[in-house]
Length: 465
Image (cartoon, rainbow, N blue to C red):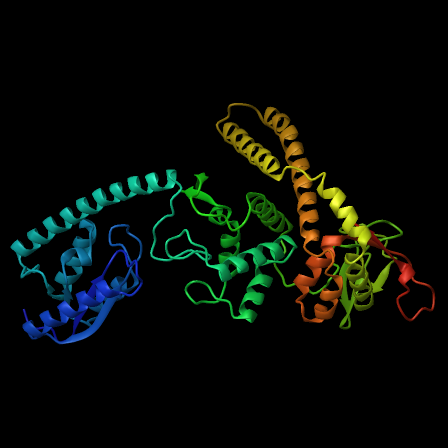
């Protein structure tokens, strides 16, 4: 076999707890020494750090190396040990097939086996089988250890610390804790994950990896049981954790309900109108829809079979938005609102119990659907059994949403003047969340003939409190 003109070094380690890649760096150093001893020229290093070779999940560097072997870019491979290359017999056979077809030698820094010979191939197969057995045993031990840690409420050990916590998974990071609590407060007030991501980016706040926030990362963080001091394991909450909570269990339940409400609403496109869904026609009672004409934003009572309105009410958007925003900010500072909110708080519902009831009802519906799928009863029986559960579910969802609205409003009471000074700097989603926390809807009356501006008497707000 000829000496490779362009050899590859492949290095891999399953777990890099420190995140400094020290393990793979040592492997590369030993492989470079082996290359010098063999007289091979190293063309490229392929490194999969913090990556398992037993799980079967993709290894980007490994896949790229195989492609380069196939294309002839590299014609030799150096590894520290065979279990760095693979821990699965089937994957070893796949690599051997490619290496044999392309006449690509493989050498290990920890031994002198030539896997291109019959004896070397037999040795490689035995090593791959032993590595697989060792990985399986290690996986069983690790799963048992993880089960024990979860039952004891101890944190899961991983290569990356969770946001809000030090690497021990227990100690809080005060600045990050403050960010999580602010995110939760704003999300409950009606802001979207997209709006929160924009805010975090503007403030220069990054994830634990130093990257900008993504909407799915924000949602996952806000709903994490960890933040409520709960230990989850394999997708289920197994009990209380040993660390102090960042958010209360009640707050997490309201976050879950808010997520469900946002999912149901289906809003995806960026908001352009402050009062979408909040205006009603005084003549027919139907909602007004946002509608632009020649770049002028308007709210319109739309007639026709798809909307069912009378089509007789139209109001220009900017003036009515300004009028109601001013009314909301003024009302936030009134003592009557604070008194009303305090009175309502004394009659607040048990959100934990409501959340448990909702979960039980959803599980019962899933069970009914599964039994219907197995043809244990007829369509009529299934619909009859489903109806009272759905009615109970919808009623509890309404009660939970009302409780969430009260909690969201509490964050804004007494802040009207302060919010007014920064109103124009808030994004539209943030403004809409503040308005919707206090305004249930506003009734729009017909315009006075010949009027050129919006008459405040045309607008009758209906407050939540």
